[in-house]
Length: 419
Image 1 (tube, helix red, strand yellow):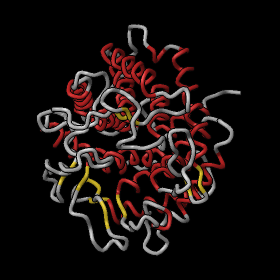
Image 2 (cartoon, one colour; image 1 turned 180 degrees about the vertical axis):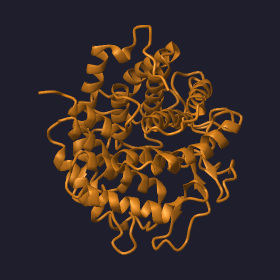
Image 3 (cartoon, helix red, strand yellow; image 1 turned 135 degrees about the horizontal axis):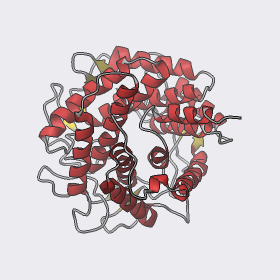
């Protein structure tokens, strides 16, 4: 694998652009600090305040812990205690002390006692980043997360993650999801780095072979999201609830970009580990990016990337979500680093211009998380500004190599500074 330096003038090589990304990251981090609750981290409103009924959630607690750990690794003061707070929450009120695993909300006060792979992937990611940050009890949290993944979620037979279980693990949902497996792939790349165990890279490739090189490739490189227990596509899933925040109907361009980037990270990680690395990881990433640009960008005549498409590639949910554009930008930067192809520079600049114009909120802080079809701030799908993870990673990824994973890459950069 040969990463290529672009022959043209790239923003990735421009000191001012790198400074702009770093400054935007600091702004995002400062806003997110207010999400701290006694039992973890909660959802902030559009002005960066915690609502009176805010509850600590595993998803936000894990994402914040991961994000704050990467801030601490860079040498930014004020984040060590927040990482430690997240670890305590994930080892305390968010964890099921009886049956193991993690609830969605502290002490399952939302009435949901189930255990789902999506959340557990984020717990593993948070724990791995906290280990790299050398925070107390991070290794214990990581060991717990790995044990649950190994014993409950990972299916060696399927080469993928099972989706969800009842509280005591006695009953399993007859569903398989691309979204949870995508975030498991992300977590496995990080686990490979912190554990120096190549099995995580083998598992990540098996997931990618099934979800992308198999199903998505057969669907024109638009990612099929929903499957039954035997991995048969469920094309009508959530037709009556098309804007679901986690399991929307149809295909989701944002996930196509996210997968494209992850394929490049996996390729780089396997090469770095001296493992046999298939050439289709690059070509599949390129096709994912191309097809989701073709069918997602301005598909309804307005600027921006729509949330979802139907099976005829017509826009279904026309809202523009911030995370979709974060992943599009990050994928463009990854492909630009990998290939040096100028088309990815053009896309990279286009996505950032759109984000600066429409998503970045200079008045109230952070980013608008959602725009309506006319690109006006909206809260129809995601209310408030609870998500640091996507925008923070979007300003980090262009500044980091494709491997190792982000926390480990940041640690390596810090260690490379000579006195």
